[in-house]
Image (cartoon, helix red, strand yellow):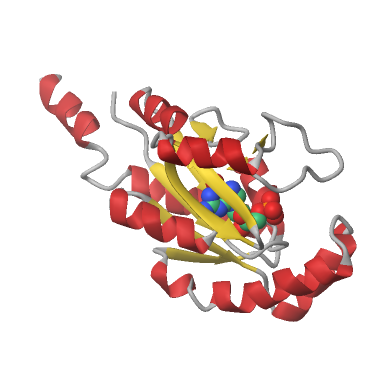
Length: 201
Ligand code: 5GP
């Protein structure tokens, strides 16, 4: 069995990456890495499902113990990827998906150069503003902060391997599936399959 891939997905808040990933994750060959954060839960968010909601002290303890594969500070809160589940699931052959912001993604690029980097974009900044307002989970000042952050983030899309524009949801999901399939079929990731062909003489 081959080791699972590490798939890093970024995109500004409101670009629809959560909705796209919910579709992708219906296939159980994927494992979604649940991040830790110090931000407060939004209505409906559940500890251990959406995030592990931690105090700042607890988060800093985990950093000290080298329990985080990466972490970053974003809009005045810590966000980080607990290391162990990622490593265990990849060993089990699952493709692990990290939904993280750009600073953290760049740390992963240094540590795991074989990861696949995918950036999700909204069709325009205007549409992003509209979606954030419609979602209604953030106050107007938080939306402003996130929009300011978004332009800078989108400018960094060039650091990723792939850019998917989420205008139409079905098309965006199909694009992500195609990218993952192409990555699976790379010769370096298909070594076991190639060997199997040779063994069955
Ligand atoms: P939100 O507060 O909207 O849930 O997340 C804010 C940003 O933090 C999003 O861009 C999200 O992808 C990112 N994020 C979530 N978890 C992590 C993580 O574990 N590490 C890093 N670096 N960013 C994360």
